[in-house]
Length: 360
Image 1 (cartoon, one colour):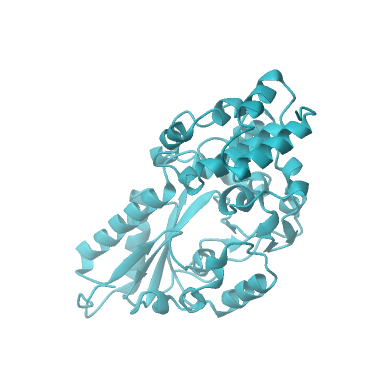
Image 2 (cartoon, rainbow, N blue to C red):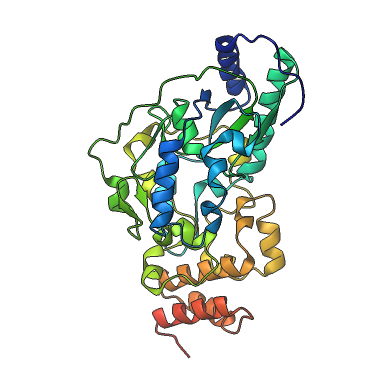
């Protein structure tokens, strides 16, 4: 946080209204100021961690005080500005159709374009700069999925939506296919709104559709079964029982959001950064599996796909090829990687070949 002197007097409501207007100008779907009361959410997190649902994501068990108390993360914080930015690059029907193409790789829609961390942090800094132009110097730090921040809880507190049964934030007018970002500031701003009311009702579509039954109860996700965790966060072998359920999903999973009734209001994003890059969408599994490490680096340059290593990428593709229709090209692609230097890759290739009855 900056040591800049804080403005002596602020018209809080006027500033909040201006932030909303500036946010729209910068491409945000909504900007609001959140209450910082997170004790209940922290208690839920601790109970979730105690069940081991976080798997190997040990970082979630650290820095609990900084998640619970924004001022512990950034000393001097008095208010949190929460913002969302829609990312859907295409109509929902197109994404669902891709899942029905077993020889084609499915990449979570958020990862098809530019790395969202870069886009959102840049826009948040521009939003903070606009505020400084109006009121003078003040202290702030911008975050986007880059620090111990309870971002969904803060966004809910700001009135940007409610946390649904699939654990994603949902807005009544925009669905759930958006990114979140925050500005921690030493300005004492009034909260924008009361907490958004919940509108999931008796619907259980997200629970019912989850390929691996990772949503073990409403509002409770076992990450160890979640395809997003298995294909991105985990660096271990994917459990045998879950591999056939992953289908052609090679990086993340959108199923619970694709079926959510509220996402009928989700509109394709006008943000050019989130449009598919490098011809990534619609690529055949065998084509992607043949790429060497250098080609993988080129394919994923500036993309959220850089969160996985080339070996993890091949692991995921091997599973998808094991689930693909048995074709000569599929078998040949797997055989070509049978002696890969990585034990992780070799084991998943052997599994996939066995699935096709082609074990040498």
